[in-house]
Image (cartoon, rainbow, N blue to C red):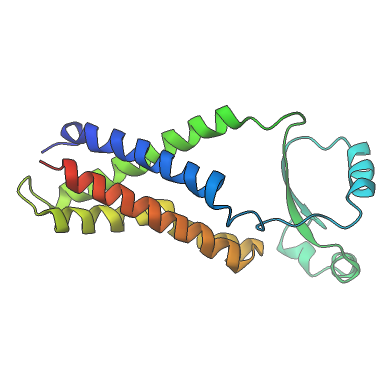
Length: 184
């Protein structure tokens, strides 16, 4: 077996994950409380809007390196607050089509890496259970494990990370089942 011989399960699993993720986010609604509204949002938008911040990742107060972290001025800024990180996105409507396309490409990549891992340990005659088990674990690494660092380093609420990891489990089970179904 080669990675090219698994093009169909890679493609179908990406389609399956795309459908399942659409159901999770558009129907089930358990991600609706991942973000909170800022207090006095209008004043915040007015003031920050005046700064004309370009799209990118920002940390405030900013620290240029480890030496600056020890400076009295930086420590005073931390203690005074606010302290945070933000992602500034381009102005205008949300590019949902582009994001959905990128999500589908990402799902293809997770499927391809999972297929590669499976090819290293499975044969064409491997059982449904073994294929599902192997692919589910491999794709879980792609869909869920890296999310933990968002809570570790960026103060994302653990509840939000765990919800996204649950989604990753559902996506990986979907991927595993489709691969096992189409394996031979």
